[in-house]
Length: 279
Image 1 (tube, one colour):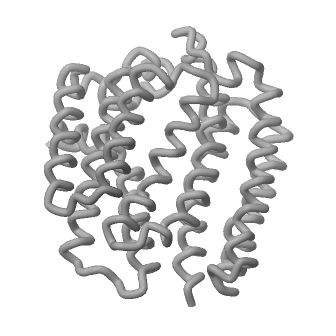
Image 2 (cartoon, one colour; image 1 turned 120 degrees about the horizontal axis):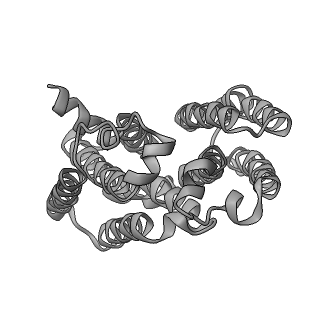
């Protein structure tokens, strides 16, 4: 049982939950909610590929995680790096097999690009300043485009794609500030290590302001209604103001870890805003 939970942790349940929410929220944005068989296929594919990418990332980051995240399954000795790699390959194959019955040109491009980006990220881009952050944000945001394509209207996945992309990009840079100790040990070239924490912090400020402004656009374009605006202001924008205030006062690894958790929670409120925005 302990080994089973270790493999589940390797997939990162919170990321799986976020991917599942992305699929369900996108389903609610359709003109008619999709058939549940199609929803289950979409969930299975997103969970398999998300878990595969996370397992591959933990395999590649085994040494870094011994410093930054010693509680993860590989540093704790619950799973060997080789077992994590085999598990990742199995999950990638599972995702590919599941997508075959519902394949289309759009899905072929989205799924193929997502797999390529996840592999390139873990092998090469994670240690490259900003490019690794950008890749993670793209892959997580693509869950909405994927779900939209599965459900027959990819356009409805575009606004939540940009919201998830912005939140994730900011959070990835915050995590780099948090992880400077371990990343320095393996000579990673993240934004804070390559250009300094002050510049990384200014970049986060700029991206957050752009996200806050951009998140208002769907309301003013009449894509989402007044409930979207209300939830956005009170559950997303105000916490982001606090986020900027806290980061401005303290950019230590401990506080960045706390702010990273805040951003992860705030993403769900952003999805809630989109969910109620159609009413």
